[in-house]
Image (cartoon, rainbow, N blue to C red; front, side, top):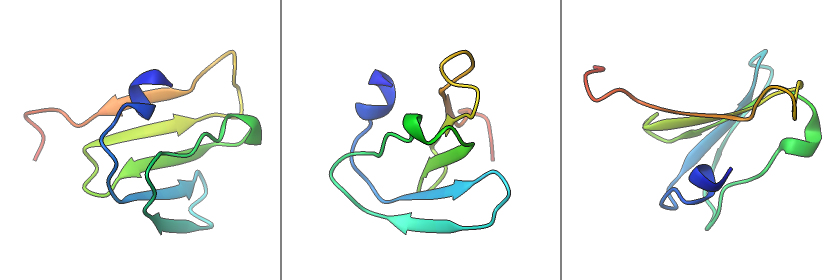
Length: 72
């Protein structure tokens, strides 16, 4: 969570695992969906990174992943 919260504030998208909904957001800090017990994704607007909150927390997740330098 610390690495996620330290990301520079920028527009981001929030969506669920089933793609039932998605929101484009801006705020001075990123949301914490830990208590939702659902698979929710928060991604930088250009997919530079993605934070995944899981329904298995705290046993599995959350996960923070970054775009590979070699990815196109």
